[in-house]
Length: 448
Image 1: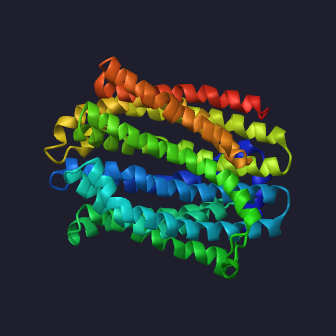
Image 2: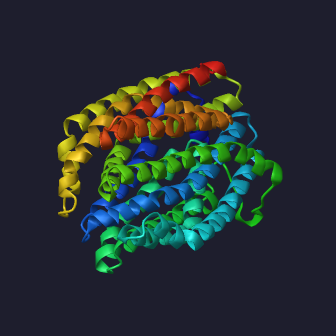
Image 3: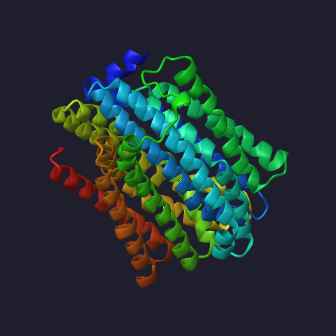
């Protein structure tokens, strides 16, 4: 298996891109199904508007943890793929060991810091019921941060060598368990919104078991990190963090963007607008699943071809990924636009959510146009991460989220008086302009 997965990296990208992307799409699909079901179950609580708003307030901070974990994972993935491409297996093994060490240390550190300051943060943001719900939900997520970090890193180790299938199996199993644990902890054990968070941590920690077995016990993976030799080798840590920090900052900028949008939405519409944003974004997270899967494959493939010094094949990978992603997302955008009202009605269980269905419908229809452009910027970021030049990916994300989307959302909603619709229009504007910048940056670095 280990030879097959690695050899597949060096075949024509037109033949292997979707084979590598499909398991990631499935894994992300199960994760997004959980996110969707999480919102579904929470929407059945009494006064669910405040419960969903609480998750909305907590989401940027929980996402920050995921951003840091994924940053270390992407940095490790990039390093390992390049070492595989250049034939340096021993250095790849050492890199995986250091990546695992970084994940453990950073998971404990950031989880503890956020846990300590959770209550003053969320009660300061929203003194009412939404802030209380956010504190209850977030603290459980924060204390489980080490489990999130380790499971993420181990999955990235398998992805780096092209073994997307087993990475998908473990993460998908965790997401499926999460779907069943949610109603058990929320309603069965009467934990309310805290049960949703506990179900997340518990199910994610279980994924560490199969991942550890495949990598450490079964010895069927190509890359072999070592639990007994965990260390923070400075040179290797720096190599990982050169990609990991910009990648984390890229995701953190999106988290900051969500936070900023939450504040703007509350100013324009109140807690109900945040509930619309959370419900709509959960739907849109399903829409971008194919693009996310292809982006993961792009990171691995471009890293391997860059390590092998084959820029001709790197270019073929990028172009083919763009064509495939735009084709898929166009059909998804059309589907969501046509059935937006029916999709938005899924969240109308509680009486507090029924008046918001029309706003969820508007959110879905306006933002769906951006799906056509999103793959271009996403795969540009993936390419820069894969070849170890993640600073350009960070610049692209900052441009999309903080330089274009939020300012235009403020202009449209406040200055032009378009309200919530103007905020969604700002998100759309950012997705469109970021695609053009992605092409420009890749041409600037002579990668296409």
